[in-house]
Structure formats: structure tokens, C-alpha cells
Image (cartoon, rainbow, N blue to C red; front, top):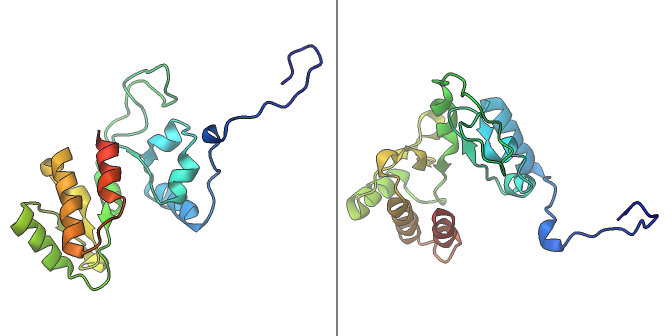
Length: 176
């Protein structure tokens, strides 16, 4: 570090503070989808140092109702001020990104019916070319409470026979 007295020793950051730069095909796909759909993310608006890591894993945190926040938190880099008028098309651009592709061999309609019958959770199916291919968890509507989202993940694990993954634990941690 240059202290102004001729000492030019290099300052090293701890490993836990260094974040990987985004790369790879998934990272590029996320960037392209966000640009194509004109969606704002907290990641980009806040200049989040984890953006590369998250985008590389196919994850993004969306800002709904535009990219201007009405709060002015001193620690946050998101632009604050008076929001722009509501973009009525934004929900239609966001909805396709809140989907889950069930494992191969799983009947999507039967899966949704079982979720409703056994767990009281109603979710939408795919439309158009995605019919029978995905379930739309973004359309849980008013039933998308913390408890119902966790029940959805637990029920999904049981109904698909895919257990032991990080889904439920990661969701519990993120929702706390």
C-alpha cells in the first residue's frame, strides 16, 4: 500500500472478500435474457460484487416496478428518487423466468394435481411451447408465503423423489 512515504507494499484482500468475475455460458445467457426482457436486477442496480457468481449459477434478484427505489439507504448503490410510471408489461416479461423444469419422466399435470390435492398448493403450468414442460412457481400469487414456499419445495422433493438437495435448506436460510 502506498502510504505517501515511498512504501509500495502490495495490500492483499482476504480470500472470503474476493468474488469471482462472471464467466461461462450460463452467465452470458442470464445477461442476454435480462437485456432482451428489459428487466432490472438488484444485482446490477446495486453494483453487487456477487453478481458474477450468481449469474454464473443462473440466479438473479429482480427489482420490480423499475430500477429506482423510493428509499435512500446510505449503504446501498441503487438509484433512489421518484419512481417512473409503472410498466404494465413488466409482469409478463418476468413471469417466464419464474419457472421450474420438473425432472425428466415426471408428468407435469399429475405433479401439479398432486401438489394441490396432497398439499393444498396450486401452481401454474407452462403455456404455449412450454406446456407440459415447466411449472410456474411465480404464479403462486397470494399463497406465496414463506411457509407455502417451503411446503412447495418439500412437497416437490417428495413427489419427484429427488431429496437431499440444497433447495429446502437454502430457501429456509434465504427466507429467514
